[in-house]
Amino acid sequence: MGTRSHFVATTPVRVELDGEWIEIKPKMSVGDRNALYTAMLTIDDGKSEIAVGGYLSALLESSIVGWHLLGADDEPIPFDKALIASFDPDDPLVELVQDEVAKRNPFGQKKTPGASS
Image (cartoon, rainbow, N blue to C red):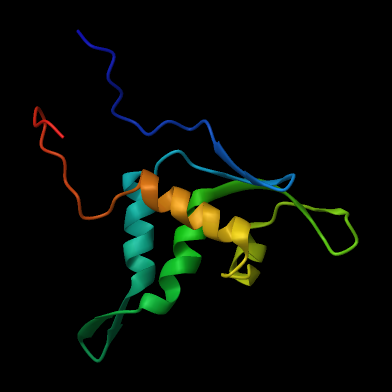
């Protein structure tokens, strides 16, 4: 028998830039993806719509598990998931994190068991 796991690994992956870093989950779980999809879906008057505006916040909130970030005074900013929504989306480290999360979670690309890549 092989050593396959049916569960997502939990050892964080560190994304670094200029001495600061953000740790993310190595891969989103089924529950993480469901929460992301739920955050994007709105139902109004019986009609469902995709709310793209909540996507980035939900993606980062479900993926980020820790950080070493410095404030304007060069003091460490304690990890707090509530602060993720305040990130500057154009910050180079935040962009690197988004890219790494996207690379590790290729949504919409199902893999067929036994198929070659």
